[in-house]
Amino acid sequence: MSNLLKSLVAVTALLFPVLGFAQGKIAVVNLQEAILQTDLAQKRLADVRNGEDYQADKAEFDKLKAEFDELLGNLQKDSAAMSQEQMVAARQKLANKQADLEHVTGKLQQAEQLAGQTLLQELSPKVQEVLRELIATEGIGLLLQRASVIHADAGYSITAKVTDKLNQLPAE
Image 1 (tube, rainbow, N blue to C red):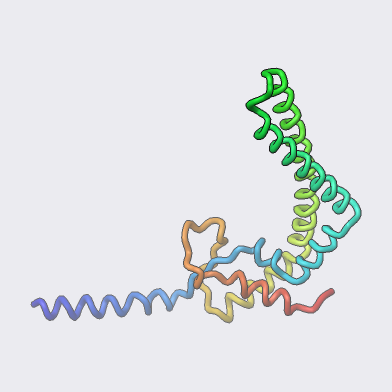
Image 2 (cartoon, helix red, strand yellow):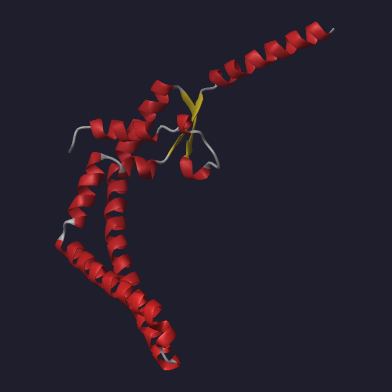
């Protein structure tokens, strides 16, 4: 009886992968990453970063960051010798500088995000075409967006394949 049970378990174990394969492969993709890693996206991001407004904001950020670091260093170094009023004033100055830094950082991030969103909308039809092709050629039966998956080994990801195919498409 135990040999029969062992044989049944072995046959069942061998059938499960076959049944899973018959329904198609499972894959995950991070579409935003796939698009933003393309050559076109890298070029557009470089164009944004080399623009006059972005460069001015970046220079302001660098200046504010240096001033913030200097204020913080002075506060840490001199705090033992400061009066209560001097300590409050120094902390207020530091907080104001940090607020200025956060404002400029937001402007820089907004410029990059706007370029990324524009690109995502522009490439959306091409991405759908690439996904259809990959689903057919790879035999994918279930494709999930990476953000909605708790765990997936790297072998399940087709993100790099999507990026490669987008890079191979002719430029318009």
